[in-house]
Length: 399
Image (cartoon, rainbow, N blue to C red; front, side, top):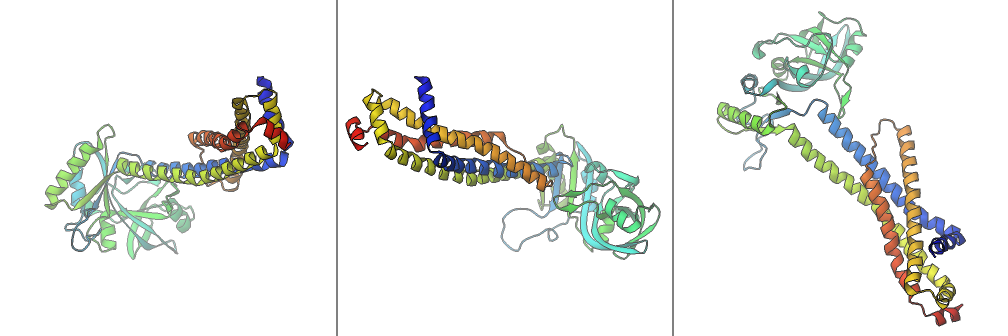
């Protein structure tokens, strides 16, 4: 009996190969769409998170201006009541649990050296920048640990800037002009590549105090605090807030722990992955409509066959099960074909675009397969019930 139950749907599907193929294709396209879209979404998710976390997660960023809704004109980065200063950075180093501090200010400027010129990003930084952001010096040293206000005119070249200006010859001790001012090259950074579209190699590092003078600003863009990872970030944020509020006389700054930013970013990217999965799921619904249509037509065409089964003693429940099994088999075959097609397309996509980050979230793939089978069951219920309720005599007479 069980063998007949399995063979009956298979023979029925084999008897209508083209119709079966088209129905299976509809489900397969839906599964493949879910796999491809979620794989790209998850790949981007992991890529963005890895880009942010490569510098460590125990970082707290402090920016001038309070990020809140208030009346009056907007404060903005450079228009806060009191700017973030190098003295603020020095004071923050005295907070317990703080391992390093990096005051920063960035801008774009022309650099000239060795008879060549190039426009690059100029990063005003503190002497602890390499330790804070896990970056290495390839040749020479980074900016010396001078007092922030008495910083000497030293510069450290990014790897690409060094190659473009010096052609890999030793630049140490040579003079370079940054925005018209002369600096002595003391080091070259190891290659870091691009991070979120910013080329960290095509840059030059100068002391933060010099950068403020170069761009005629009185406020740092940001102070980054790197703290002991064993200490809760909330405790460090509280100490930072207390110290800066005492120095500024009011709460006119914004403190953003990186772990909080990563939580928000992760939530947004999770929603994005779910959204693209839902878009791919629309194809599954279309495939389910196809199964409903095919099964309805199948019942109409096989009225005599159903009547014969009822005449030889088949129960309504057995007729219902046979047609439900046929619908489930259609969706199951479509799901497996979709998995194979989807993973094949991902391999081809990765081969064609190696830089495109893709990662298949297996829960989504399994969920899509379960949804495909469920859609087949649901789509097959109405036609199967109609077949089960056919009157045997009327069915045979129709034949």
